[in-house]
Figure: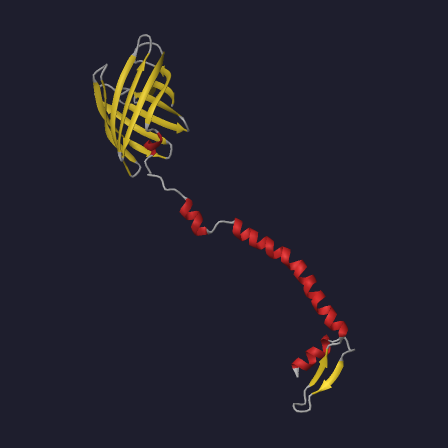
Length: 213
């Protein structure tokens, strides 16, 4: 009955009516106009919907799958000193404990092997120079190790943190104590050192150096 009503509603009213005597069902046979309209309606529908389907397919192909995006991400070692590995040169200013600030030229080399880092830093000006060497270990965002300076025969320990492109370290020693910060930006990095005055507990600027590859 539902099929008969659908056909009756969809027909134009000009089709030929026929009753199946064996089943008692009532049919409407499509006339010539209905036969011609059917393919045209299908063509119109296809013409309107096809461009939308094409756009959807293009969007799906162009947008990378989530799994592919995750695979494309490259995991780093987590050691910020990897950014410093190699040879650097530049210059800056050194302020001795006694005397005036002096311009210096510097050469710094970092050797990074896994979690082990060594730093050699040589700076020299007209009346002042220093030559330091540090051996550090990086683990879980923390650094620890030792340092030594050959010109003034000084040595001590280093401890601190390293994350991203920044290193903050506390320098302790028999002749020098203070803090050091290293900031990396592309092919450049800076080293700032302040010295602790044990009597007053304050810090003074000791060295500021800008380096490049």
